[in-house]
Structures are given as structure tokens and as C-alpha cells.
Image: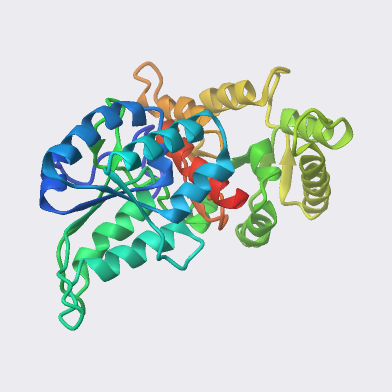
Length: 360
């Protein structure tokens, strides 16, 4: 019987409601425009640049860029970051970019929230009017927070908007990528697998503390394919020293192996699940899930959005009926247990922002 409380998860999140197309020209005309690091690093930023700056020039407006964004670009230093810095410098000379230097917070997310909270309302004592503000960002969670400023009952003010760059290089509505998930429900209603990239994640110890008490309480086991064990052994015993973080990854792999051994002794780990594929772990998961979904609801914890997309597409098969397949991941900074919906571009942009912030 299909579990009632485990709906099928698909490889793309449906919009909450039908939304109107976003007019960049209208947002420039009606208020002030800001941009985040994640959008400046987006592969389609050059396409947006071609639309954006002629519109700013025609309206006599400027793009506002917090100093913290510039510092994140400088810290990142890759090809996309260098292009963005050259672009900002060129348009600043033409009077179309202004670098905001009065923020006091090192986290650009907090900077934007502070700017939007303060400047969407006026200050009569200072003779300052409130402004409609629009942010261009690929961080869907930040965009969600910006839109929620419009709901504040204790504070009036002008409208606040946040949009991202889409695949065509235009601004558009963003999908929220960090949809929270209920770990208790997942354990209760499905067979739970784990991927190598979670076991070597910075926040695996946090997941370990939350997950194994639940497994013990529900008398369930975490399933670890043999191929994942072999990958951990390779990372622990033969680190690739050509990679910058090889020694740190080796340390994490050793911790994961000790963790799995400890929890296997206590009966909370099952090593292997009828696998006969000696290739990459991704192929093992695809093979196992294709076969086992006919009799079990299945869940995987993995950071791999491409693997997530492939697994979630099993829910769309017409030639095979089966129980739901779901995929989850950990957020980069806080290690929260969230849905992995296979949205590659949104997650790449979000991770770029996180990595840039770490290097500052």
C-alpha cells in the first residue's frame, strides 16, 4: 500500500501560484535596484548586462552594489568573478553603478535585509523618503525573506521585490531551494539510503546526532551501499593530494567510517542492499531504486542534484508503477535537512554565494 503521508517528489518544484512576468524596466523606473553576488556570478549575467545598463541610463538611475558584494567577488577570483568586477568598474565610470560603503555587517544577506528594512520606509526627521527596492539575486531564500518584509504589520513602507536571472538572461521569479523536510517522517515511511557526499559533509556529525536516535526509536536501519563504503575507504586511505582539500576530506572520511562501524554494531546500519553493480555509486543508487521502488517507498540523502534529478524522474515512469522516491540533502552552512529537488542551476548559484562568503 502506498504511504499516504509520503507524496511523490518530482524533479522540479511546482510554483505556489501563477505569477506575472517581471518587467525590469518598470522596476528600474519605479524604484531603486540592487544586485547580489550570486547573480553577478550567474552564467547569464552578461545577457542581463546588455538589457540592464541601457535601461538604467535611459531612466537616469544607478545600480546599487554593497561593498560586501565587491569583496566577495574579489575573494572568489575566478573567471566569472573577474568578469563581474570588470563590468561593475566599467559601468561605475559611466555613472551607472554606485558602491554602497556604509553597511556594517560582514554577511551580505544581512546587509540586504538591513538596507531593505531601513530604506523602504522614510524618515521625516532626516527628510528622507521611502523607496521601492528591488534586489536581483539567485538566493531564493533571501528573496523569500525580502518579499516577507511586505507583510510586516509593525512597519509600513514601499514595496520590496527580489528576483533572479533566468536561463534567458532576464529577471524572473525564483523557486525556494531550501524546502525543509521532516526527518522523523522520512525514517518512518521509507527505506533510507545515504550517499558518500553526505558522510563527508561538514555537517554530517550534526545529522548523525539527529538521525540515529530516530532510527533506534523506529527500529529502522540506514542503508549504506557497499560502493559507498569502498569510496570512503579510498578517500581515507589514498587521498588525492592534487586536490586542495584532500587532507580535510580524508579526515572526514575516517570519521564517517568510524561512525558507520559504531552504528552498525548497535544495529542501526545495514551495509549493502542486493547490489551487484561494481561501478560508480550513482549507478548503484539508480539500479537499486529502480528495482526496489516496486515494493518500498525509498529516500536518499545526497548533495548530488543531478543524481537527485535522475532518481526523482523514476516517479514519472509510465511503464513501471511504484512507490514514491524522494531525495534530501543538507544545507551548506547550517546543515539543515531539506528537500533535494534536482534544481541544478539554483543550487549552483546558492553554493557559489556560500563559498564566496567563506573565503572572505
